[in-house]
Amino acid sequence: MHDVQHPAHTAGGIFHRLDADWAALCADADVQAAVADWLAADRLADDVAAVTDSWVRTIGPAQLLAALRPGNGRLTDDLTDAILRALLRRAAGRDRSATLAARIIVQAMIPAAVRMTRGQVRPFGGRSFDDVAAVTVAALFEVARSGRIHTRPGRPAANLALDTLRYVCAELAADREARGEDLAAAEDLPDRAPGPARMAEEAEVRAAATAAGLTSAGPACEAEATSARLELLELVVDAMESGALTPADGRAIAWHYTAAVPDAEAAARTGTTPGAWQRRRSRAVARLAASLQLRPAA
Image (cartoon, rainbow, N blue to C red; front, side, top):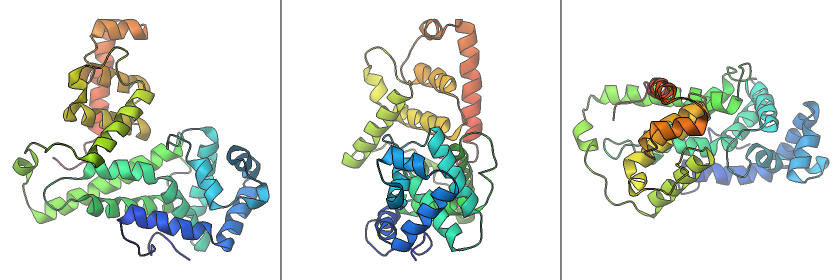
């Protein structure tokens, strides 16, 4: 059976290989039967069939992934929480079914893993997208198998992403220290004009920020499109997904630093005072900084 440790050998990087391997898993009758049995045992089969417009007898990994990945790619509702917790319980075992459960979790978390990888890539010093992606996927698989997540309160996807990010940051920091290279000056060189891939990434960040209420309600100003502001929005969105920031915390940072919303206007929108809004922003910035403290210095 394919698994995350021995992905199918196809070109295009680890995420493409995972997608190709996933197609093979979905075509495996034994895998489909195992998934159907799990969902029946956990009393989730009817709900998954309903949200995927499927027959209970035909539910397999493809339908399970469709239930785990809503249209916007973010794992947020009660059904996805229940499914993910059930998978995490199975992944903590020591048999073939545990490996399969962890593999499904990895596939469901690929959008988050891609965002995580982008956040850790550096243009200098060997930290390419593919290098970081390999560390991220390995970390995600290990965290899924660890048995630490399904017993925690809160959103299991957020807990899983946060633990994975901590693992990735620690691994990359150790690698950087071992190399003993100070590349800060090189990394501060200005970026070149973004190519099509980066433009698509920026569009994704804007869409996620808009969905989270982080953008200004008024017309967007020219400054909002700058790279630095988009990077800050991406950090805030990731911190909200991981549970490090609440939606109100995210707005407090984003409205001030990326949309230039005056404190008086922001306070009026949220039904508070400018002083209270400023204090919320100060606490939110501290929480964001704390959530990033394990990241290697840029």
